[in-house]
Image 1 (cartoon, rainbow, N blue to C red):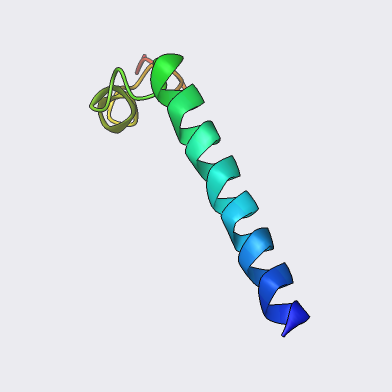
Image 2 (cartoon, rainbow, N blue to C red):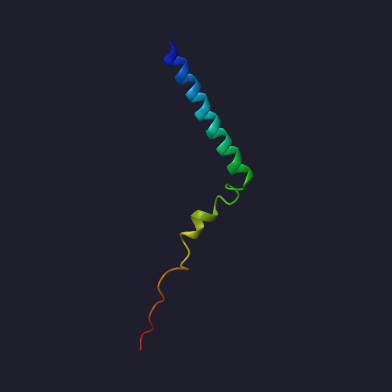
Length: 54
């Protein structure tokens, strides 16, 4: 029976850590630009320059 109490306590602690991490990420604007990452992959900023034909 003591193992159940230990597991319940551990799961509540892990859930509290995830909640604190989520609240921290929202307050530090981690989710401010949801479309930015998906649009950045389409840009050709870092591609090699095309060679000119002579």
